[in-house]
Length: 220
Image 1: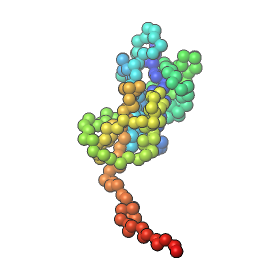
Image 2 (image 1 turned 90 degrees about the horizontal axis):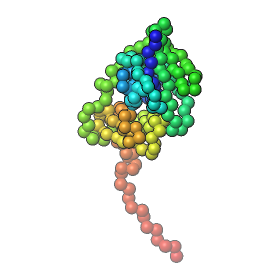
Image 3 (image 1 turned 90 degrees about the vertical axis):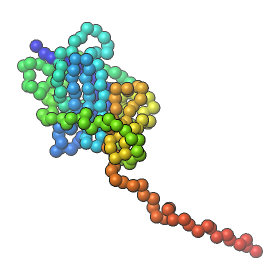
Image 4 (image 1 turned 45 degrees about the vertical axis):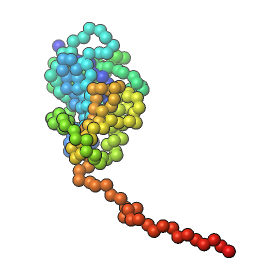
């Protein structure tokens, strides 16, 4: 007997820019999957930014299927996530399988072309990511690490969104800012932590008014 559900490989791969690379926080070196009867939620974070999206737990190609891998939460290792290669705008689904006679952490991803990969879920506890998602927004401006913004753009592009260089921000002052990816990915979002307590600084030479240029007398 086995339990199974469908995974959207594009959604899984798109979370890669938000994964951590710190060895000491090994439980963040991957993508969390929360499997339910109707949907699968994909989440990644490194503590500075978080990305999440949600898709149905049935294959988009149609056909009769009932998800049976329900209530499972597992962390797919970063190596597997980064190894997923898809063509531009390609939407590919794979069956996530867990067999009773396997190691408790072992899962299998079976693609439509018959290829399959076996992996061990990361043995760790993913933090309660919902506590990071802001519920109120005051619109106060904030300062952000530009590398985080670039990673958010990569996520939007990986999700197949048009206008990939545009991000929709809901600023929140010193609290986390919400980033949405538009109508092409209504179930996806990112949360970015701002720099705290940093004021914009203008170099002194630019802030000090200079004397007007001296008019030179015409040569005679």
